Image (cartoon, rainbow, N blue to C red; front, side):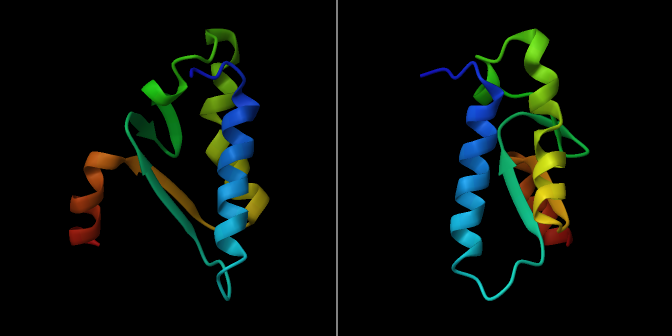
Length: 90
């Protein structure tokens, strides 16, 4: 089902991160990956958000920056295909 409300994505991601955070002794950073083009933690193009109207896509572009600020830790989101090379290099 395509979601047209950016808040749906934001709320679900934050809920999952809060659940994980509750099982950790502390949260030092957040890292994630997804299909799409991500530049500086901003999704430029991603099929996951294809239902979002163009006039509201800015909310998606800033979503991970808002999540980073909410959690107060470093956060990085990259394309899922880049994960093996980032980990090996890193």
